[in-house]
Image 1: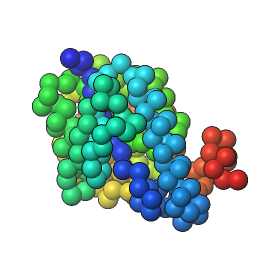
Image 2: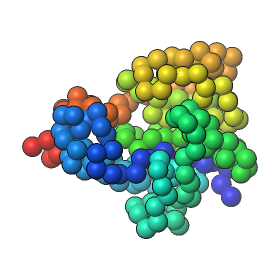
Image 3: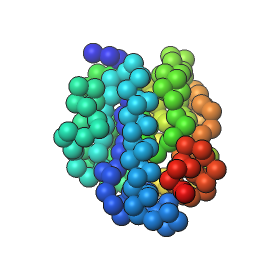
Length: 200
């Protein structure tokens, strides 16, 4: 068994439920196509990472989808908010015997396998690694032991999440990756060449 585990949180790609803030500008169908495009990119990037990998589905575990069962373990997200769902996924990883557990979402086009490998390496000398997102949240979170408090008492989806998380980690060694931008609203893709063909 690999000692490192990468968790990938995904939403089931359904019309009207994917990228709802983006859909207000581009429409539900284009928003769904963009989300599928991001899922494919996330799959390709994570496939190149040398860790074990678990996909956590928001609604229902799917068979025969883009996430091959030969590469990805499949789980259901459990919990009443994002923090508790992430906490339960991290707990599962550490309970299974993994020494480093890391989570990414599935809406970041600019994430690379090198970013993720760098983050795992950073956990040799740090307690926690965070990939800061431009919106005040984070696109990656990793740790080598469970930091339960950082998943609680957060206003998820707001620009205070990263700041509040770092406050919780004041007595820990935290490594920050480069800041990247995840895709939530039209402005996030408006000038990004990878999305130009969706916006014609």
